[in-house]
Length: 240
Image (cartoon, rainbow, N blue to C red; front, side, top):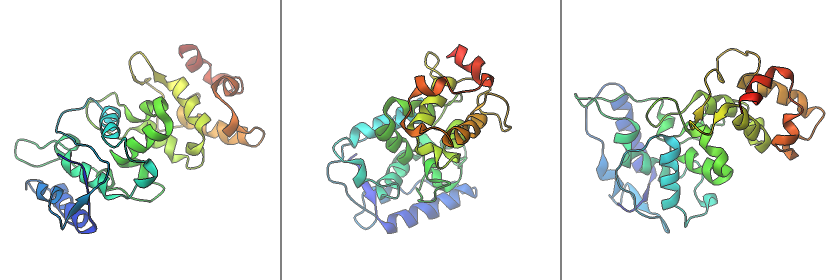
C-alpha cells in the first residue's frame, strides 16, 4: 500500500479506536482511515509498505526509513501524520490481537506521536526513523530488545531521560560502546537497573554531568571519553 499521512480528523478517529481497544474493546482496526480522502492525504515521495513481521523496532525502523528515503527528515517532524498512518497500518505488528480480538496496548504515544519532551521518543515508528536518520548505526542499540516484539526499552528510556545529554552524540556513543553487545545485537544484562548501581547507564549519566563542568564532551569521541571514565566502568570496558 502507498504510504499516506493521516489528517487531523484521521488521527482523532484512530485515537478514539485506540482508547476503546485499550479499554478492552475487540473491534477491528479502522483501516478505512488509511485511504479515505477525509482521513488521509498523499505524501509526495513516499514508497509502498506491506504487512510483514519484524524482529524488533530497529528492523521495522530501517524498513520504513527505506520507503521514506526520498523525503528529507526535516519534512517529517515527530508530529507528522505519517507516523500515525504507519502505526495504524502496522497495528497488528505493534499490538498483536489476542484470540478474542482484544489487544495489549501501551500508552497512546507509542502509536500517535507527541511533541512532549519527556515522551516523544516513545513513539515506536516515528522516533525509530528519526534516530536512524540522525544517528546511523548508533541508533540500533536504542531500538533493540532482549524480548521479542516492537518495544520501547529501558535503555532508550534511560538515555533519553537525560534530555540534554541525549542530544550529545558522545554520550550515546559511549553508552553503546559500554553496554551494547554487537555479536548478540542486544544490550548487555545488568546495564539498565532502576537503581544507580556502579558502572550502569544511570551512573554514566551522572558522570557525564560532572565531566561537562570541565570538558567539552559534545566535541569528544569514544576513545577520548573512554579515558575519562572512573574505574567503576572498567568491567564494562573490559567486556566491550
